[in-house]
Image (cartoon, rainbow, N blue to C red; front, top):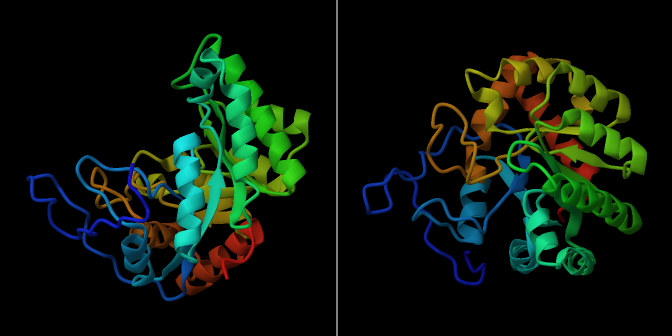
Length: 295
C-alpha cells in the first residue's frame, strides 16, 4: 500500500509507461465544489498509484474540494489516520470490511482488531466508522455469522463515539436494515455506494439515512439505481468515487480518482432534473451534515 508520506506522481491522462491504460482526462469542473465521501487513496490500481496531495490537488482543480479516506482493515485504517494528518482536505473513516471480518475471526483476532479500530477512531479527524456492513455476494456459510457480529460491534462503536456509520451493503439490503433496527442506528448512517432500489431508497428517506451514489449510477444497466435516486430525498443524497474502483461512464474500466466525481454529479443532475449548481450545493451541505466540517 502507498505510504502517504512518500507521494507518487499522479499520471493523467495517458499510460503508466507499461502500456496499461492510465487515468482518464479531467472532466469539465463543477460550478460549485462538492466532496467525495468515500475513496481509498492507499489502494493501487495495477501499476498505477497516486500520492495523497497529488490526488487532492487534481480533485480541487475540477471542483472536488475534499474527501473521506476510508479504511477497510487494520492496515488501511492506520493509513487513514496518517493521511488525515497529512492533508486538511481529508477526513477519515476506519473499520473492518465485512469480507475481512471472517478472516480476523478465524485467526482469533477479531475482537482485538475491533478494539484497535475503536482506538484509531478517537482521532479528531476520523468522523466515521466504516466501511462495515454485510456482503452476501462474497461471503457465505459460517462467515456470515462473523460478519453480523462485526457489523453489530461497529454500530456500537459508532454510537458510543458519536460517529457516522458508513455501510457496505452488497446483496444484503433487508438484513442490513434489520440489523440497524435491532441495534438502533447511529444518528448518522450512510449507505456507501448505494446499490438498492426504490424500496431501499424509501426506507432511507423514512429513517433519515444518507444514500451515497457512485459511478455505478452512470452505468447503462443501472436503471434500478437511477430509479432510487429519482425518489431520494434531496437532503439525503451524497456522491462518492470508491476510487480506484467504479469509474463512471464514459471511462468505465479505467482507474478512478476523486477528480472523476463531476461525471457522476452531472449524471445525477440529469436523473433528478436538478439544476447542476443547486445539486452541487446540496451535496456539499449534506456532506458537512453527515461528517462535520472539513476546516
